[in-house]
Length: 276
Image 1 (tube, helix red, strand yellow):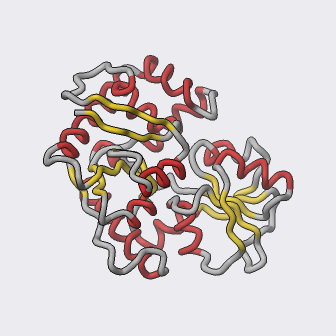
Image 2 (spheres, one colour):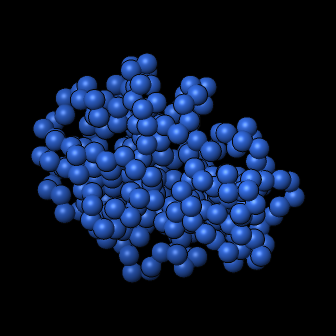
């Protein structure tokens, strides 16, 4: 079966999909047209009907719950993995006058900032790689970092203001759910479950063949230093990536309640469904 698939170029996704991209495992009859683009572009592509299956922010997943389901494999979720609020220097705190850069309107990072700091600042969006440099130039007061930026902000001369993921975890008593793999509800029966199983095979292959997977990761990564790449992969590719499980499902439910309470998710949208 031919499927249009979207993933991000971030190390956790290229690691998880390495064996699929390089056809190192039994593809279970799937023929995949895979596109690698920034997470906000993936979100936009799902809204526009560009993908059958794609990585997406869980914020976008909540807004698309009537059209897509979440696969039980492939998620980025856990404790200590959430977005960071940073500034170019010490002493900066969110205020109504703050100029805040976030990595995309429908990213989970933006949702968390809205929920944790309502009405605190004017929010603009930028590609995640541009946020740190913009802060250092003085173009914004605060920025929300995701992906590799979470591990390199100190090296890049930025100061931590708040770990938004940890703040969510403390409020919710649940791991922070960042993004997952969505599948179109219109796909034939069994396709989403079979793809979730294929992705588990790919993740298992990656752990056994790390050197081989590293070649694929480096082909697409923003940060090429192996001392950053592997800690990143080990942080974001965890047990919840193999299977969301009950704790992952609970975390999604908490994020959904938080988004609805903040008025950022319409009340008439159905709850997220997890398959596979």
